[in-house]
Image (cartoon, rainbow, N blue to C red; front, side, top):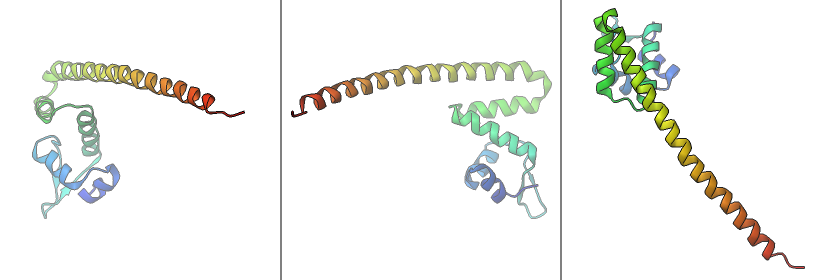
Length: 127
């Protein structure tokens, strides 16, 4: 079992964020010791990584809460959870396509600047 400080060191996620995730119900299995201190196990670390991945890819807290609620409901919700993940995956893939499209525009502009700079350098060469 790990303390919140150890989890913070391992994951790089601030303790207030971990507390917030727990308060919002995103970490469904965090235990506490006799003094009320949080204790995290491997399952909790997996949840933290999963929630972090969902947040980093733009999933709102409310949707993650819904996912956790469905998870707690058990196997009867597997299809609905799968659909949530498929929908989120499609949103991520669209974001990636949009990013690549915009990156192409930026790369084009950079290539144009390279051409312009090389023309300027050639006109400034004195013989």
